[in-house]
Image 1 (cartoon, helix red, strand yellow):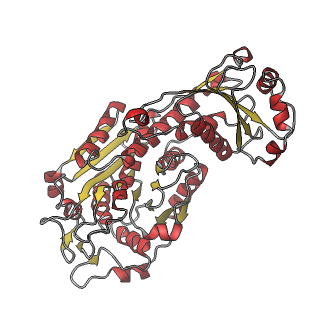
Image 2 (spheres, one colour):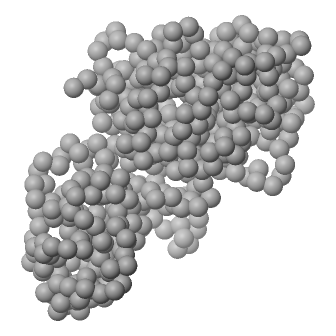
Image 3 (cartoon, rainbow, N blue to C red):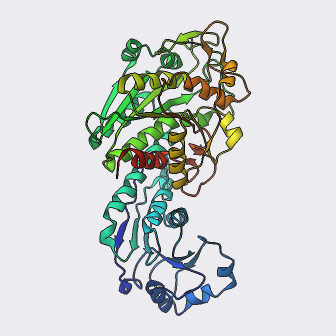
Length: 492
């Protein structure tokens, strides 16, 4: 797994600033006196810091912008990174500021003179999350693992222990999700994915891997139909974290884990098919979130269920026009074998409800291209049958800066799923494609079960850098799910 840089918090020692290696970060506000650390840097650089603050270049900088003073006179560091930031930034501003520090200081020794800046733990988290580079399959210099360090000077470092532990737990979960989503499919086979999830037992989690004979016995025929054209065996992995009261029903997280999606017999176009290594993003997010909960010893009961399959064309593969019975018993006419994710989810959603009787359920899936047309790469689509649960998730997502937007559900859309030969079709046509996918899944939500469907096709992996991640897998959802579980199920 890509290594997480574990930050440290320390008291300010101005005597080391002249000889400190690597990079030093100083925060400057537009007005007011320099803080103690900045005054020492200014003195060491013979007034360069003050001259820069008085310059037109600094005046044009926006909140969170940075400027490097390279090889500063009077100091041993490679650069002083000057960041324009007021002393009381919001959590989001602090985290994004930290991300710029992490990007510039990746693999280097970084000393952040946080001083009186509010939310130093958010600065640290942003820096850690942005200092990510998936280079496991590169050779030479590009494949070297460069381990840096991150130290933040704060007034009371001894009081940062719990915050430090929590931010590292979050980063570990996000990095696991990113690594899973970034892995090529010849490496992250269904068997390898299940193994990596099984490894979470080392954190005190109970992990069970259900193999194809188990799935056949349970009646998970829609899930099995997706993988029957692949040489890789289909699996379901159940991860149980029991940190809450014994006997309390868990909250359920459900993830689509299609390790590669060719579209099956309804074959996708060749252009861009290489991106379908990320079609297990929902399962990757669930796995990363479960790791975070375990690392921080969450006081909640949570079960994660992921369906891991590969969708390939083959003589044994499902055909358009096939009719398959789900674990619930409803029959599905497969119109398009490229609408496979919902066939995986419907069986594991039913399994989770029947087996664990959860207090609520969220499924995550890179489910439809339609959601990207509707929301782009800024927001995941949120579909829910429960206003309270939905509001709580959206609140958590907003607090973590993870874009999410509620989409509609309605009985009228069910008309598009009517089948002549079965209980339903697996697609409803081009119109409202992401909505009809959610309507399909809602048929497998039991009466009274609070439920959210998250279509993360646009946010799980992106082609350009984001504020907190380089291009590729983002780890979207780990932080929001972790916060929601903490807010709703861990008590005071």
